[in-house]
Each structure stands twice: as structure tokens, then as C-alpha cells.
Length: 266
Image 1 (cartoon, rainbow, N blue to C red):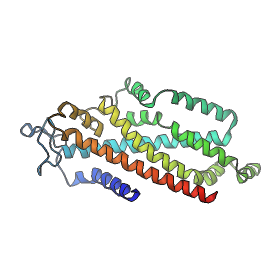
Image 2 (image 1 turned 135 degrees about the horizontal axis):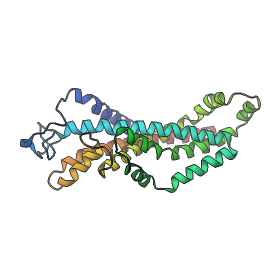
Image 3 (image 1 turned 45 degrees about the vertical axis):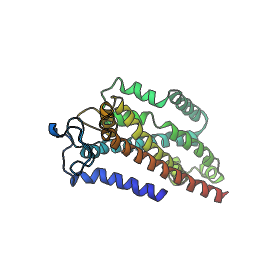
Image 4 (image 1 turned 180 degrees about the horizontal axis):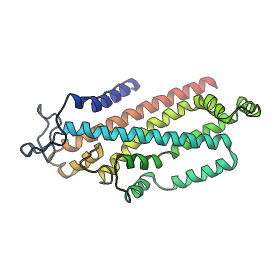
């Protein structure tokens, strides 16, 4: 299943970014004579209520959704990694302070925190990346903190500390390789979560604003005509499902590999 998910994910990502160079139909071009046309050879994904080609719009919106998802997950994962290592390595008051901050963030449901933040800000791609990053680092930091505690208690790490080996060298040379599997697992989950968060906000009208588009905003556009034009909502929703499903399968595979290696070590 892992290989199928990986190939499918790569195929969708490559299609979203490369196919527009071949399929040159404008996602913004209005055609009153082709309003809400069903999928056909001329318009493979049909048209929307303004006569715009849905395939072109799904490709254009996919670029926005994927960029926001990957960048937000990258930033939040790096922030969570740094905070988690800091808590696990230094322990004591540093760890207690960081734990309190993490718990405070986790007190609020993530999506409602997102809603609260974007309600007072004019949303754009950059703003959404920042907001999703702010609300997405806690899970990574908790996992990294827990693993960092275990690593810092290993005898060879204690010897390195006694030998006054620089902290940055211990972290980059010894912590980083051991934490890499956890980072990759959490990152793949984070990408899927970020794409879903952006799609949810855009679906509610709090995300990407016209003329920009994302899979979430396209899904929102189609809800008004879903009873007579299923394709307007179906294809953006299908893309969201495929991407998140593939990322979950990849993350599960990485988790199983990491667990099997841990069992062998023990």
C-alpha cells in the first residue's frame, strides 16, 4: 500500500504543477455559454456556475493548497523540533516552562484557535501559512521532547556532556539522526493536517479570497449548486481526499518501519 500511496501522491503533485504547462486553459476565463456543463471531452472536470473550466481551476487551486500545506508543515515541524529538543536536552525549569506553554496551546481546540486568529486578519497564502504554523507545532514538540529525554539519559550522551562537548555538536551529530524518523512521521501527518486546515478555513470563507483559489475555496463554491452540478464540489474534494489519504498511508508505513527497528534493537 505504501508504494501505491507514494506513486499516487507524486503523480498528483507533479500533475498539479506540471500539467498547466500543457493544459493551457485559463482558470479565470468566463464563458456564459458553458455554465455548469457536465464533464466531457472538452471539459474533463466540467465547468462551474460562471462557465470556467474546472480542471484548470482544480490544478490552479491545488498549487495553492499544496504550497500552503507543505510550507506550513515544514515551519511548524522545525519549530516543534527545536522546542522539543530544547525541553528534552536542558530539562529542569526550561522543560517545565515549555511544557506549560505547550499545554496552554493544547487547551484550545486547534481549529477554533485557527478560526479565532484568521477572523481578525485579512487572509492570504502567507497569512495562512503563518497561522497554521502557529497552531501546528505542539504535537511535534511533545513527541520530540519525549524522545529527547530518552536520548539525553543514554550513557554516551552523559559522557559527552561531562567531556564538555559543545551542545550544538551533541544535538546535530547525535540527537538529529536518532530523531529523524519521528520528525519524518510527524511531518507527513503535519502536511495532511495543514492541507485540511486550509481547506476547512477556505470552505468557511475565512481562507483564500477570490480571485485566488484553493481546493477548499473551490469546494465552497460548489456547495450552492451541489444538487444540480455534483462535479463542481466532487473533484476538489477528491483531490483533498487523495492527498491526505496518501500522506496518512506513508506516515503509517514510516511508523511501522521505525517500530520494527526499535524492536530489533531491543
